[in-house]
Length: 520
Image (cartoon, rainbow, N blue to C red; front, side):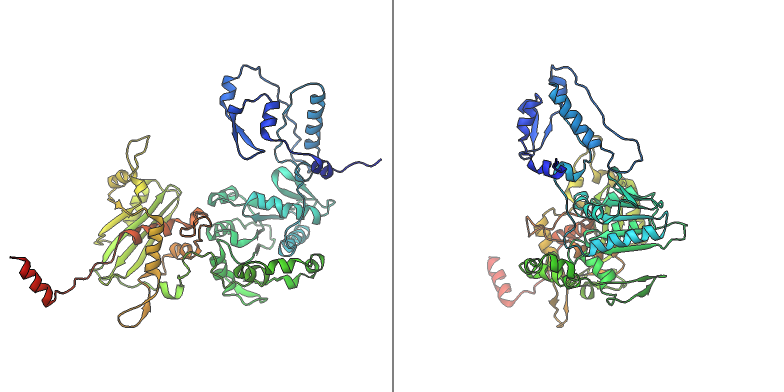
């Protein structure tokens, strides 16, 4: 007798609306906060207002550590079915269920090229170096579960490695381990702060910010004598396109091992033509890629890195806008502009010459500072006798805090820094910044922008060209990843608020005659 597979059973089921599920459980509609047709949150007031007696909780678990596949999900479903047959009102909550049997989600990574190469290389390293530790990252958990996990389950022999679903980790028989991880928010890197790895692997590196990448490099360490490596795969495009291109592509001839900072680097271009297996298995894949927009087609089909599609400040150029530091004349107006939150302080010092040209000559970029510490560090940056004509802060710092009744600007004032409000007009501010960055002909015929940046302002130079258009409002910038927005937001406040001085126009003879006439 033949039996249906788990996936066949799952696919034959018809999902019921969440309201119907709630009705079966005796939950009134007024306690439901619906998210679409099949999901809802339950108002906690139900616990206080219901007159029903408490139910019973049954926890199905397993001894830790164990290999994946003990049968917790199967046991839970069977137990629920049995109790339902006995006339009990049963509700099941599954934490990290097996995705195939429960949700019908199985399959491999799209393309089957670079990501598969990473997985196979990780397998080789784990086998060759018993007891080694590796970390493989995607930007988000859904991406991880949609691509790397099912691909690894297909590729890795179960006789040498077992996958522990709850910890997203492959445990090898020889003591090696390969963890799957993610870094969605900027702060997610802290989950790895005490870890040690021999190899860290990034799948789609351009989906990560440079600060995430730099921090995670510090986790590659250990005294076991194994090779210490970072390996990454990626397509052009994404929030990290600019820094990845600058760091790994521009300076690296393809297919050539180069010495770098005591180690070696290698850039291997990969195109669709390099994967005959995919082209044979899916003859229509190349045709579908050719239907994409020109920029996407260049990136995904040809692997072209010279792209600025989606870049908000496409006029930005390191050659034009980044300059070597020089002495700022004393008669230039100086301004401090900030973007402040407990997650990050971004402070920029900007000087403006009499012609209206501005230069960002200093920056301070620090996370986790309370107001008194932030003020102390900004004051410490300023040189003795340096006169700051105005200090700008965003309007939200004037909001009074409920717990103290005082605003952030009042607390800054207590620490010796007085601020005035900068403009909070986002689109108008970005347009003003576009104007400052746009190269124009000077009176002497030279083409240059009205804003330049000292090359010591690393974070502004890093984040400004990385800003992307907001897909829902192309006139605005995307507000994610949030780490990229702090320094540009501070600069936007300056551009929208501080204007070049209006040059006095000498009076003509006509103006003088009219003025004399109006006196009488």
